[in-house]
Image (cartoon, rainbow, N blue to C red):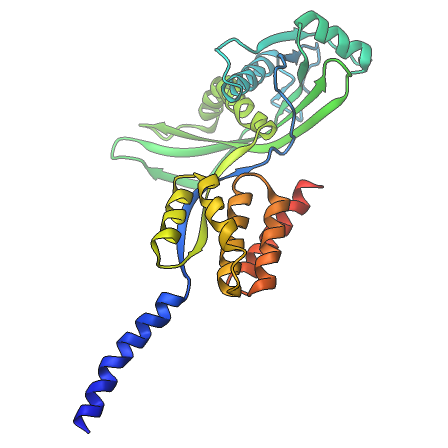
Length: 322
């Protein structure tokens, strides 16, 4: 009985090791996934100009500012700055101009052609309006920042309208209608009166406008978002090497190996390879192909998590076609 028990204790770890060696394991990798632009525009080898509207319109009682020329100019400057960074242009590579529309101005082909000709630009961006509502105080929000300073908060609604046109065809490329609320934190050694805090907020409004311009125009460009993705691999050197290629974003080298494995007679191994190929396709902006490989993986063998991943790819494709 003792000898039989001894054999049982020895054989179980060996059997467990053999089972694990034959089964795939998962490994999480950190990646930066490319998020398509909300308003995709082809800027390749095209010049860009930003115009801000100058009008004689006066704000009514509903607004603190309405189409104020300084705020419009700062918003346009922020837009130009972000475009320069995204297109890797030198500072000043995107020019900012004034234009003087009136109540009867229509942004038709002749008007857009005129702006394009005057600025010698292929893409025309117009800051059409900027509105700032009255400043309010957040009641009850007050605390000591340090022993010497008091922190108070104020806010104001902010709305801007930005239009983008093809300077050649005069086609409308984007219309960005941004509505948001701007918050200020005011630090002072004294408990400031609301009127004093409002003055400080008005003084900072040009800088706020520029910051908003820098942010709102990011909708014209793709962004990169930190995400995690799971790869399947087997505990063999060849599979580990392929996973290491993926971590280094050497997708071609990794896919060359996985493509061969996707033809394996073992359905689990083929499904693992196909799923990994789907991950590689997604992270190299080939979402339709990624979906095809995810479906192929599920046909060979249903691995945990692949059905959810297929749903994620489907939703991405649906969003891109809206």
